Length: 166
Image (tube, rainbow, N blue to C red; front, side, top):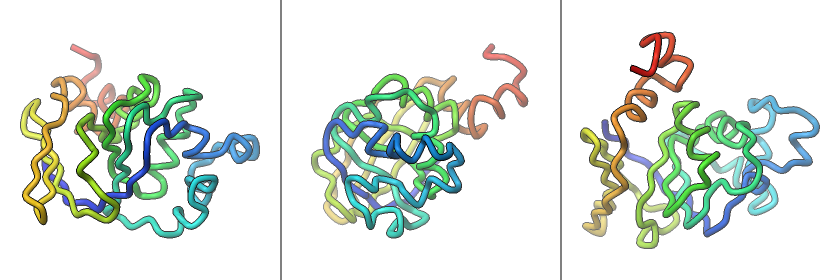
């Protein structure tokens, strides 16, 4: 699997309330409506600027805070294809995998806003390339079960297809 994407860069400690404000979640948890408020407290113009090949690139502790699944599903509804971060909050990481969103732990320091990236998964190996600068970043290996869940489009589709977690 390989995807070519554009980096949208954030810093450390991006909590789920930054992704989608709890104020908005009180109104609805319908991600198709919430996507217009994505990162509104950090960058009010962000949601309108998202392109179909965008990925979020962040530092440490991405997705910390509330464990609400809508933080993942609103990213997906906005068209975000993946999140790359140095580390993730465990609940965000599992919610992402369960919903079929690619999440990669890697050194994100060399990546700058607007970089064109190639994300490659080959078996358990994960690499993020910045072709314009000849940089190759190795991501944390992805266990086979997680890859299979992602390839199925999430845990529900995986269980429909596989029947169990054998």
